[in-house]
Image (tube, rainbow, N blue to C red; front, side, top):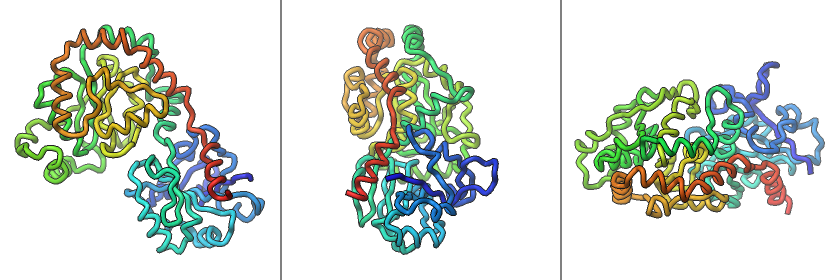
Length: 398
């Protein structure tokens, strides 16, 4: 069965290329290459604007592409009424909601959206970055997980010329011999686990032994002082129950390494950060979420830069990487997980007390094969859209 993809929000300008209007409900243009073009075998030649739905063969499976970003933006009301009617009535037309930028699954939003817009839930498929909900059917709606950020990051580093730089693993081995810092830890926007980790680094005294960024100022969309205060007073209580607020604040001075500008791009690939990776031995990663499996460019950058790494949060993130064939480095770091403040403090103390030359030699003597393996696996891997497409067809017509 041939699969065709229909967009309800394509541009009406002839030189826009394949852009989507109302990507976030506010009229912004977004290139289809960002949304889907990085997936191997995504059939861009099979994407049509909505007027084609009556011109394509009736027997073809037609998937209505509809980008969402729950919980920031989740709205089925932008679908034209003619398209909603066609989804409900045509056995070969389905709504394909692509909700890939965040990891938290919100099935109740889709159930409510189908009810309010009178869309049959069994005609809705949701693609998500949430691995736990993969292959689920909730209230009639089918959910499939997709490795969006791994695929997107790989294409960025394969393709971008001026915004990112690359080093070979041979060069990385040379850099390790002269690195002046034990670690790098990038903590960009405001999250409770990043506040706790910054506090642990500062109070333990390890902070000066690494390249550390924290809460970069003047980010678009953040009222830095008020948001910081709100997270400190509300979300950090479970992480730092015994610490005094005034003492915490003393350790949370913003720290800036490079000139990241969120007004330009939401993800920094500037080569200004490259020197900090090259001048450090390992990475401590505070992913976007600490309590769910969500692997983003933060983790894959460490792999690309040839760093042994440790992700602060659920150890299931490391387990997920191992499922995909990557090596993780618990034995190098000397512990299995960092999921609370006591473990953060212990990890910081352990890093503070280790000798940098001993750490350097341990990596060079015992871990370079794993580092090279991860680098090569990342660039040799595929997130193949054909696999997803076949899975959808099997689920719909088995």
